[in-house]
Amino acid sequence: MVTTVGGARGGRAPGVADARAVAESVTDPELPMLTLADLGVLRSVDVSAEGAVTVTITPTYSGCPAMDAMRDDLRRGLSAAGYSTVDVRTVLQPAWSTDWITPAGRAKLAHHGIAPPGEAGRRAPGPVPLTLQPRARRVACPVCGSPDTEELSEFSATACKALRRCLGCREPFEHIKEI
Image 1 (cartoon, helix red, strand yellow):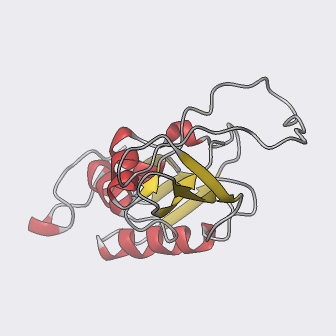
Image 2: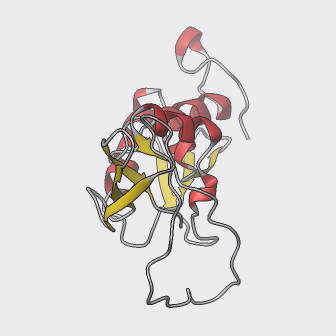
């Protein structure tokens, strides 16, 4: 591994610390207030002795339509930082969980009026159990903090969000569902 710091500036070859910093700064195309690191989809960044970068990401769910945009943004950012060879790999195991969203990411979501997910908790490996009844969620309003909210729709702008309304301040808001 190359571990020099400083990027292409000053004549030094960009290293793993630089590559990691660039990859961590790439934002999510659907939640642009979050970086891929905040969201927890950025798994690893490696730089070979020859300077080739390999980035590993995990989608928030299979079939996530933002994966191509994430890959393109990672390649574009790393190429602009001086890396000529960039490989972005996708890994599905272990499956991503909303528990991987960082505390900073949760704070950014709330600051932008999106209720962050609660704890998803651990589940046994294997198939996801089928539940026919809606899951009762206690979600605080990101605007006023009231726990008195209601779900308006199980789905919102993206499949991972639900649309809710606060019964206290009457503001509608999105909630990232626990996965």
